[in-house]
Length: 141
Image (cartoon, rainbow, N blue to C red; front, side, top):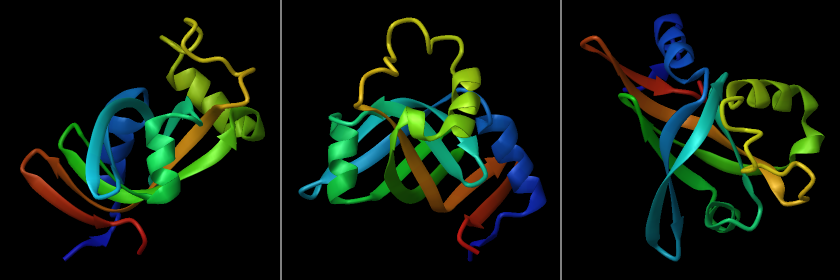
């Protein structure tokens, strides 16, 4: 049975995912699953991704917000949300720019494009493994 995010699991999540990290993000459209690798940053129970509003992942999430992620001995489910243009979230963008500094300004991201948005994956539950310990986590508790 899943339990609330305990301090030990919270620390592992922050260590592993509190910086630029590649995760697999799964979405569903018309009953068909799709998965792709995305750069992400974990903050307090959510993963954040910079993406394009016209991308397949946003299109899928707007129809069906249920998502799943996987990376570095963690699997989780959550709710995907398009938070809108990056300019609407200055405090969050400061953290995202810092985390993604290695590639953010290499021409891949255009903050002047009105379709450059932040995708939030708010976790609902997940399973984390760390040195022989399994954490079944309820992020909503």
